[in-house]
Amino acid sequence: DTEVTQTPKHLVMGMTNKKSLKCEQHMGHRAMYWYKQKAKKPPELMFVYSYEKLSINESVPSRFSPECPNSSLLNLHLHALQPEDSALYLCASSQEEGSDTQYFGPGTRLTVL
Amino acid sequence: AQKVTQAQTEISVVEKEDVTLDCVYETRDTTYYLFWYKQPPSGELVFLIRRNSFDEQNEISGRYSWNFQKSTSSFNFTITASQVVDSAVYFCALSEAPRYRDDKIIFGKGTRLHILP
Image 1 (tube, rainbow over the protein chains, first blue to last red):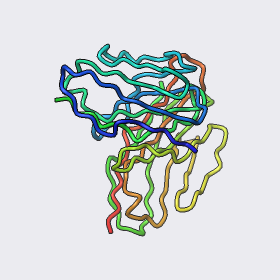
Image 2: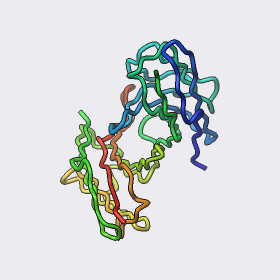
Image 3: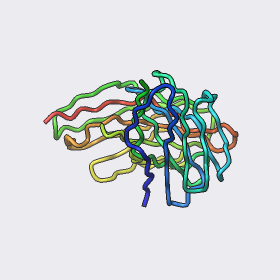
Image 4: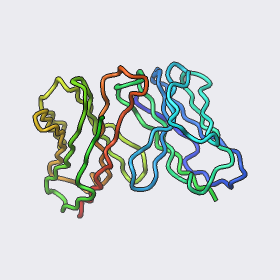
């Protein structure tokens, strides 16, 4: 089973709202990732967690706050977002961080009004 | 520095035709990994293949085949007898051997493939 699940599928929020995106995998993977993808562009890496510790933060604004409560879960907390943050947010996981195959979830389509 | 180039932005072919998606990469390492992902309109990136730099054998999986040529730094993807369900954006990606803390997978810009009925 190579399934990564993400909730919600769609999210519309105002610039003053606080919301969270959730990601879950039960493959025993020790690395989990958040990507942002704008229309007609490739995914851009935001954060990497390895063994539940933040490994990479690609200079993402602090209005995005990741959290890894345990090895199966990854959250992305959103606060005071801007309209330009509207995008598809993809979660992925891999056996280990690095060159292992990343398996992606279906994504959350976020619209910031 | 590592780089992936997918020169074909968009391709349209009629169903049942064969189509090849090109991927050219640049890397400083002798050990590296190449990937292809498919992204249908639903949004999920679907893993298709992972190939390490020491394995130059071509691979076939059903209607899909991959041609890896280190001499030209290319990892091309061919769909034989294309079907409408193959319509998607296809990403080629590269990852160098994990040695540096900031190692990550680098995606090409993607090729949007339209299969016309």
